[in-house]
Image (cartoon, rainbow, N blue to C red; front, side):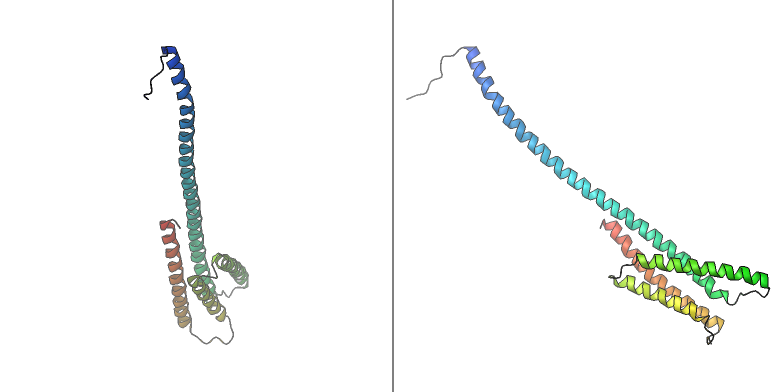
Length: 186
């Protein structure tokens, strides 16, 4: 048996085609809308991940800047405290001002010590090595004020420079490592 098209009028064919196209259009529109929605969702996830990475990078950069600045000021204050014993004035009025400045420097030094230590990660080896180097500097500066200190002023400063160089080297390794993480986008 051969199938034959019905003998319909143009308006009947038009109605059939319209009735057939409408559901196909609705289904096609839904599929298309779902695909667009899926792509937008993936794009939004990528954007969110990038924004999060950018925020972390910005925080790392701020951390690098703050640690670097605090350490630079800290090293300068330790040098000032280290040389203070040799620069003590003889005049009583000048001694008061000198002791006040020395106390302010010691207070700021202690504050910076804590700021730096709180920023270091106890689970990272380089951070611990920097902490040890900073402790060595503190012990050395405090040792100058011991009554039994027998080292000459020159020996004292040579050791101070060696310890400061060691701490600086440790700090540079940490800062370089953090900078590399920023560049990678970690």
